[in-house]
Length: 449
Picture 1 (cartoon, rainbow, N blue to C red):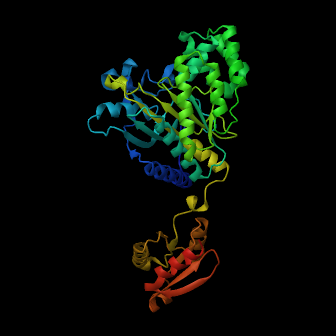
Picture 2 (spheres, rainbow, N blue to C red):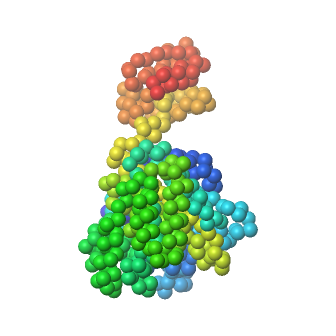
């Protein structure tokens, strides 16, 4: 017998799973639209050259490639690939439709992506991303607005213990140069430093040395990052510490000033008090050029989302630089954490059926369906039991699905033009005129909310 389990790193979504996802997506979409972002969708797969070379050394290894088809399938070559994220496809769209989009284009996109990663708690090979991106401006207002939108999403979902880690790739490069890491090894150093929270200082030291960075530079890096505090809620003492370390590096000083501007601009937004300057934050993707951001919550390995500025990515498709900045929320991780913390309101995962019409006998099937249609026209969510089983069995089925009311069209009720309505929560049963059944049910359902 073949296995009935889905492939590793993927999941089947049962009704309650989908209701949780739709609850989160509904809040995310509502916030994003209030912040002026417009919807966009792209194909599940892209031409492979669109994706390769955009995610760095490790990212390229995680792209799911699609083999050539037809007479080429035996070659083992790939010409297509499942999308790895939503950012590179967006860059392609900007290049393709540049004359049809506004000067400042803000979009949100909620679709699945695929990565050939090793599955772990909260990490899947197929998962949804909820992205926002702003194209066309280098202003720090963009970063502050994105951090505000993300903070509003998390607050509306019920999170009260999240931190927005903030850094800048240019600051990180300046720190590495001031610590003595050669420019040619910055990429290697970033890969190692990005793992500081996961493997600790000793692990990073071994990895830095293993990547060809000498002992003095490794020690200087670790001393700086370990001694750095991110406890200041506004990040200004962190800014001062960074400014002092890179004071002789012109680009580094400018980048620190940009970080300071973002923190100050965010003071009047929902991101206020949430931002922590974290110079160890690297983000693994190679297309970031400026500010980088990540959401952390306690007791979660990894983040709930991240993003940053990527002013050169669109230029790979267009031939000229277009400033851009974005953030991606990890929908699956948010749902995992919310489920474990029991953060979903009961209404978000409740069974949608409010009334089940019982089937008295086979001769009343048409009338049962007609009653269901009458109730549905008033907005009620109604199911019809399909078989003429004993009423006790029908009640048990409805109770097992948490349906609050059962409507019964027995011989006596039909003769009087009535409907018997049984409240499975209390056991009470009441007969009402058929024309008044919907209003009665609506009133009873509202009174128990």
